[in-house]
Length: 153
Image (tube, rainbow, N blue to C red):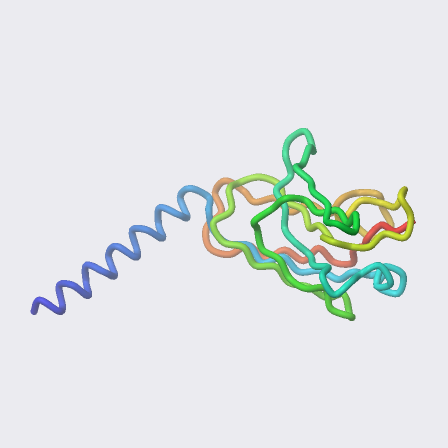
């Protein structure tokens, strides 16, 4: 009997906790896409390069850093994945606050000092591919960003 009560209590607490997370808009997102210019961008990707989800601030200002080789990174503790040869990626993040997010190509070795930034752009545009996490998100949000480019000049 005591075991049954404990099991029921655990299920109740798990359900209550998941309800609170959903009510606060902290579901999960699954962001997919493909880097369409891997023939060019692939030459700038090193073994240390990766894609990472970053939070977009209202004024588009970001904390950035660079490594000893001068490769730029946005400071983020969100989901990341290695960049594969096909350029296909999937990023899964849980518990995100409502707002806008973008995907950054971190630690990419740009050929010139005036190369583009590490945020992935929608193919054929100069627009950053943005994912919006709504305040009322419940469960999982699947987002296919389609074909994207790493801006290389």
